[in-house]
Amino acid sequence: MNRLTNKRILLGVTGGIAAYKSADLTRRLQDEGADVRVVMTHSAQEFITPLTMQALSGHPVHLDLLDTETESVMGHIELARWADIILVAPATADFIARYASGHGDDLLTAVCLAAECTMAVAPAMNQAMWAKAATQANVDALRNMGVHTFDPDEGLQACGETGAGRLMDVPDIVTRVSDLFDQGTLAGRHVVITAGPTREAIDPVRFISNHSSGKQGYALAEAALEAGARVTLVSGPTHIPAPERATLVPVESAQDMLDAVMQCAPGADIFIGVAAVADYRPESSADQKLKKQASEGLALSLVQNPDILKTVAGLTENRPFSVGFAAETENLVDYATKKLETKNLDMIIANNVADTSIGFNSDDNETIIITRDGQEPLSKSSKEVVSRKIIATIAERMMQGSEQVA
Ligand code: PMT
Image 1 (cartoon, protein in one colour):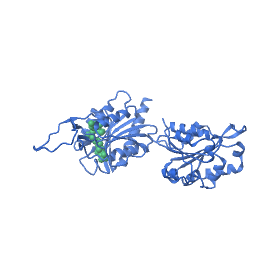
Image 2 (cartoon, helix red, strand yellow):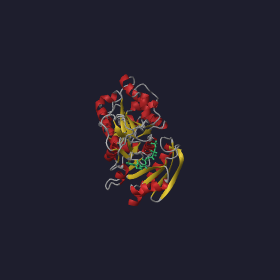
Image 3 (cartoon, protein in one colour):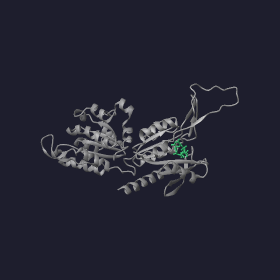
Image 4 (cartoon, protein in one colour):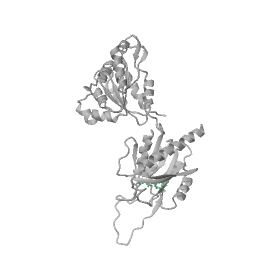
């Protein structure tokens, strides 16, 4: 299970011999699912090149406080706000002293000063420097400021001396960083969600669709992210922004949606079909815009679309926990329960769409969670609140399932 999924880590590298270990640290943090961006001090660049850190992190490395190029990409305040945690590793005695006394005259100290997120430093220096009263006072000052310190290991140092001062082992730093985060109920899980409407082309300018806005599906994606999951959001056309940390796969038609879902849902932990998928599409789509005819009308011949949810829930291998939505205007519980059975689902959310203040294109929803062993009504509230409850119930069910297996 990846312990740092969706987490944004700003890695500060300062100028000591252990700076070369920040390359490995970047990789190990990424292995745990973190998005890592790097700030290097001038002296750090004497030990390891920004190019190495850029290649490993996959992002430009931030070097200067007054560099107009990098400041325009992401300024120092934005960098501080972007991070869930700022980790300075290795942290030299000089950096610790300047950070503890509130300096902000280079990029790294300025970012640390502006930060409101979790902060951690992993000191590395000569054993005598680490033991000095001044250094220990500065480290204590950082601790009093709420900064987590990952104290150095003992052993043979690059300078040939032995004692406490070596950078904590990289796997131990990764564990300590992971421990600083609350592990959500879906930490390390992969959730695939469909959302929005599909569009079924009649000709190049016309289509059949419905009123789905994507609000319910996007709110579920956000709630799953909050619970620590990695989220893939396969979405038909909408006018709302997708949650920043979700991987968005935009699609148009039901067939496009099925193709995209089959790329990511097998092997995922959870699949939630929120999309209002068109049940039918025109038998053929005209290559050119249809011209108005002199005759009275136009008959469209429709054929059935594939059922995406049923396809996923019917997988015999790598089947995710499968959740559907049932949009009904009558016989809500009966029809939804039938869909639970015919589509072989683990859970269905019955959604009364006859009431326009809930359901399609509204900000609120009122639903009933139905499983094979019961029902739980969710009273009317915002789609965000409804989504958190649905995600919590899914997590609880999955936990029960894994306990039964164990
Ligand atoms: O997007 P919003 O404006 O926020 O509105 C939210 C919503 C009303 C669209 C949502 O809450 C909802 O109810 N979604 C399900 C819409 C729907 O198509 O329901 P259905 O009863 O027709 O389909 C049952 C289930 O099968 C759904 O999970 C649907 O995604 C899935 N399905 C349906 C047809 C098909 N060809 N493939 C499918 O996967």
